[in-house]
Length: 115
Image (cartoon, rainbow, N blue to C red):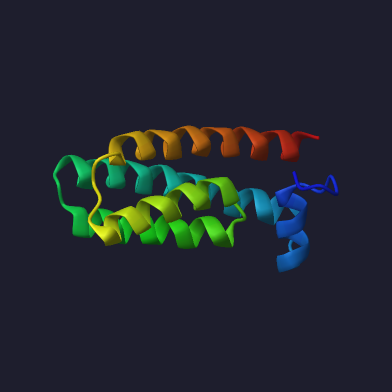
């Protein structure tokens, strides 16, 4: 929620001229894609394929921006920048934080849709 009390779901609906059912369908696909990308990011880092990891982080950043998942976006942006700089030390921690924030975002979405 932003300061005006309007949920990101309502903002997304207004921004894109969609009804609630359309938004729910899109967000379900988004959540599936986001979960898949987080798994791919974890795997890439575990395999020390930092080029692939940076591409995945960059993609995460883009899709999070489009769907107004701004806290997830901020973490993905940090990971993307660290990978671009060749700083790999705290990636596991950052990816865990990303995964946890994804779960918070998912819960916030569910609560916004139910109200």
